[in-house]
Image 1 (tube, rainbow, N blue to C red):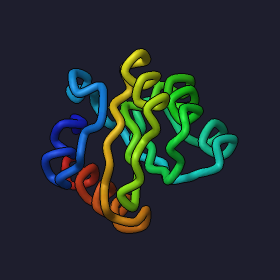
Image 2 (tube, rainbow, N blue to C red):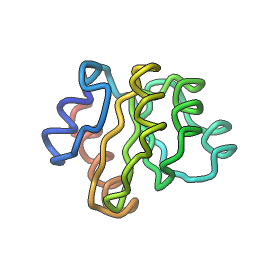
Image 3 (cartoon, rainbow, N blue to C red):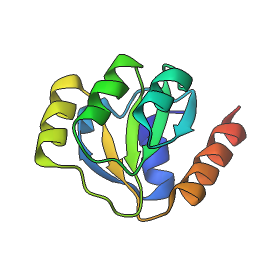
Length: 113
């Protein structure tokens, strides 16, 4: 499933790297502890987090994530968006909590396969 399809299905607010929404999402990971995400997520995943600082972009780039979703209407910092644009990592915002957005993405991905 493409990022763009997830954005449309869930009404996500795309904050940056809007030209990279054609990437394929192969799974997802929900977590706020950067070392946990680095150790357990996989390339192609969409990462769901509450963190908004620029280190999330470094982790997403290192792990080759498809995109990042910020929960609870959290807004990325200006530095985070600038770094995400440079690294071509889409960042989207949802007003939903992590549990709900994770379930919705899981349902979308499993319905597609």
